[in-house]
Length: 182
Image 1 (cartoon, rainbow, N blue to C red):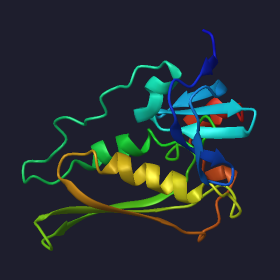
Image 2: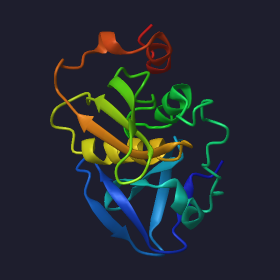
Image 3: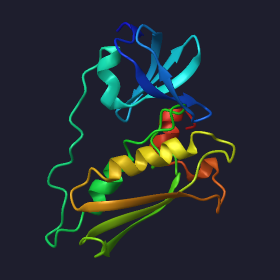
Image 4: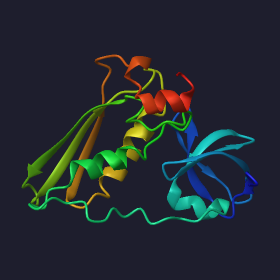
């Protein structure tokens, strides 16, 4: 597969590792490094960037439907397994393992809310592999946007915490295999 592409239109991208939003103009040459979780990690002459899946057409990729179907419980609450599945589509753009298998998600709670409208709020506490990671807000926002795709979820809050500090022992067996740690 040819990984070299030219942007067909301007896109807003997230610079890696700073997490800053920047505009990449049409005609920019990029090389695709990673296509995980519905987003693309690309390299240009200006550095590494993450391009959202909704902008995949700008690099000649097919934009896929991200709707989550049939993921509510009998009472209308979102299915927790569907939420966990969505979190498995969230990746640090520099690591080819999702945030769940990296051990970055500490908790996920679903709360029945009634203000301003009836619905369910999902609260996630997560961490990062390093406190200085500038991609933290971008990864948290990616997690939030994917959670909001689950039927029954009307709000989501993804909070980054440093307690307890992350370490490699928190990586799942599957994650360790992907990283070549076992």
